[in-house]
Length: 400
Image (cartoon, rainbow, N blue to C red; front, side, top):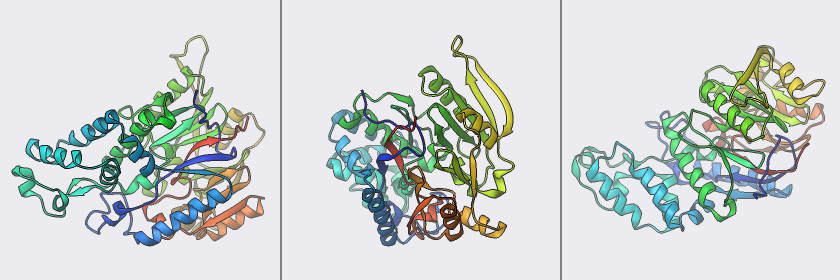
């Protein structure tokens, strides 16, 4: 039985999965940053310093920090895991048979740590030990044979724990899909996670962790929009109902825009009965309530829509879900929402981590009794993600 367990957004955080940004960020250029889903070219050294500050803030509050790169290197010492991950990379139809053989030989020569680094940072044609064939000939030296994964920084999206089971998600954007290949391998093969049940897996309908909020034990909210599709929300609901992981799933449509790519870009929890929310959507956000009967689990019951805050309070069985607005005026609110002012990470009830640049939102939180741990994020934020996006909780104290 796994000791990893998460049933809320605000239970005391025990263990978290992070990815310290590295060489993959240095691959970003003005030519490719759009296709790799970054709004700018981050200063890598400063981004690493900011991330180290984030990790240290968590450790200072007693949180165990795990790193994707370390877990992946340990996982790749196992032949079955190495074969699985390598095969997934070589299945890329863009390679062609001849280049595929050269890439296979290159990867086979790497030790586990080197292979982990290459799978994350990518591989350019110039770095390939040997090559040949039409595809190789027509490539520029700087073209990627294996694409880098700069968005691996946002570990929330590729996995989310629901109770004692983990959902390894199905990412919508091509630039991110190999992230779940790596996460899937870690959860299936690493000794720490041996025997962990998977409630969701890559290859299913599109579902991303940034769209999943654990409002309370047994109550999920799933945003649907740019990244998570309604079919993904339905699949997750069915599986959670079947396994007794949830009794209610709120499906929340959000605008399909860059600034609101996930539900947690407009709303995160900071207390058992409070959320910080972008005020421009607070009055318009709606939810469909999905439940199931014990007698016929394959039949979903859908009702609504009604205001998200109302539906959430009903499902959570509380009188009111309090809203703390982002900023104090429309312009400040819009600026701080763009800078991930809503994307806070709760370490416990009324204790959260937020970017220091969102001064008005942080002040608002403190006025409402929420302690804010401020971290720098001028470079980390260039991929449009805040402290919640950059963290995947694996252990939280039960909030039941």
